[in-house]
Length: 248
Length: 115
Image (cartoon, rainbow over all chains, first blue to last red):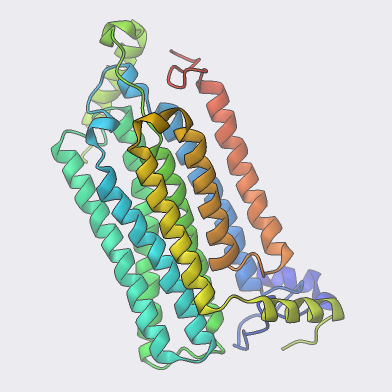
């Protein structure tokens, strides 16, 4: 990818758009921008589409289990104060991440280690909180196969949690490299790329927190299951049985 | 460092000058925290229900733009990144709206198909 861009823009080679702070032995900047950073932004754009489809699927089905009276329902199971704290923790981890980048640009190694450790810790708290939330929901009867709300909820938030976990591992590896003396201001781009990924994970949660947790759900209809079309109930029951055969 | 075209030189210098300070980042984080608190508070106000969804969407869009603009530096960074990211966002928003248009009706929970 980087090679192709370099060939095309060989005459337009310019500075890293972030102030020319990447003097490492990585591919030279091209098209006036750093190739690695461009690749990261491309990845984030593609990840936008990935989460966009997952969120759209969730929004399509968010009230389906209520409509078909297939409990547990989202408004019974969500603990908004708890999730608000998790959202706050992830939001603050974005601050510590940007302070880590700021520190490495000043060649402040101690600052980098402190802020990167704080970011990884906040990320780990978020993932731990999500694990606790999932186990609580499972105890309350919401599993991947309970109803369509469970399936779409766990897939969406589970993939987000996986992204956060990858981010924590990435940050810990940066911390390890820093402790071995391998990170200097010249390699600030390494921290900046991890930061871009981390902030992206945060903005995805901003959207999930609003659309999944805060936007109100429908009330169960008076008519109950009888109000739903018979064919749809049969289809849902069949789907449930198929999902119940899964080992998780 | 490879030699830079004049336009990029000027552009790069602009980025360097415009870069936010740690104090600015802290101020932004406080604003984001306040917005999150407001979101949760209005969720618990029953009389706010009719306006809740549009207000929540506006607030989360504000948070989204602030994080992308300041923490991800897109405000100060190259337009190439901005175009790339916005292209991905527009595509995903298109998929999102198309899905909702296909499956949802005005009362927001009875889909057209199979409903």
